[in-house]
Amino acid sequence: MATVTTKDGTEIYYKDWGAGQPVVFSHGWPLSSEAWAGQMLFLAQHGYRAIAHDRRGHGRSSQTSSHNDMNGYADDLAAVIDHLDLKNAVLVGHSTGGG
Image (tube, rainbow, N blue to C red; front, top):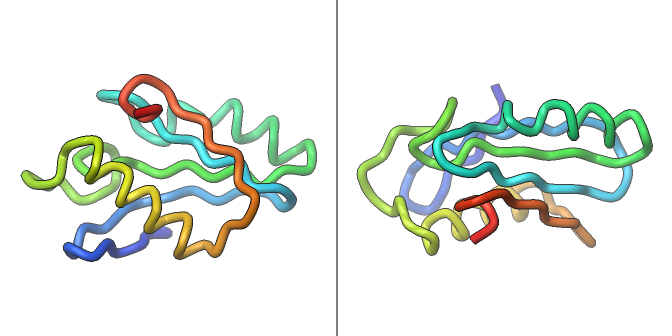
């Protein structure tokens, strides 16, 4: 299971499929990275690197009682992007995943 550990010790799960320009998906409440499976598969099959993470408190990421706000979610997404050393990424968000 692929995870990144944030500054506050939260484990953030992510999926990373394909190669090419990265497209990063951020789900809405109360979903998980699974919500993007169809889009990820399509993009991975068409020359893109598709990445989706489970926001803290969702899916396979740590269930936390802190930083469950837009700033915390943004910090977590930045941790995933930094961990994967993504450049020129396209960000796609839905609901609270779009901030």
